[in-house]
Length: 266
Image (cartoon, rainbow, N blue to C red; front, top):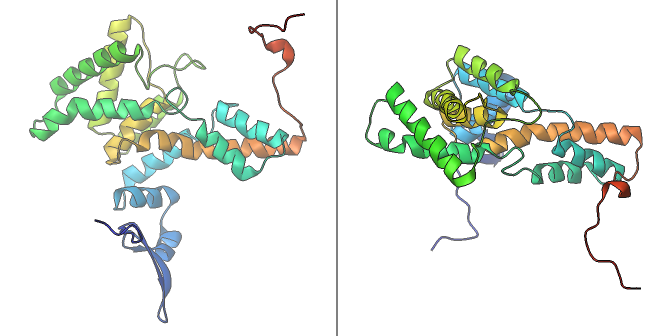
């Protein structure tokens, strides 16, 4: 049985002795990373255990930028409400992150699982992932998603006719050689979905993020995290702006609340 008081990690090590004071991150001195690596490169190293190639680093940086803000979203509303209640900045950021789920910001996780499962047999058999394999996988994914949930996670967005961030991010990945088999599969899913629905339902930010984190080699559980973590800076920005505006007690006006319960007897 494992010793529950002992941790084993290949991620990082603190060095502090008579010869050196340093932090080792995946075999690299943190001091060297601070001087020579970008934040995106450090994040890639942390998760993948290796430094990214140049195109991957540029694409990951673009991904973080794409996710940083999207107006007064629910996470931003949390930040603003917390400021109006006098709640701490740390609580506001934590509250903003906690609201993410399958409907808001979390659709990338189920999509990533769908994509991995659809290509698992071909990868296990060493089959070439050609257009035929991609298109067949896309068909199975759309069929299963629509049958089980009624909608395809990672596609469509209420605020836009089409999400303006997704095609730009895909273009950056393609131009930098970071778009792999999962980005190809994402495009095939979009085409398959349009054929079934009879109208375009473009991929959204969750969808392109899911495809990219899989092409980076990250675990599928990273998809939603790569939306919510950079979005936490949006929660912070809106929290600070609301605090500077001096508002008090953000709330739902009573005229916007419809009571449907019983009234007390006279």
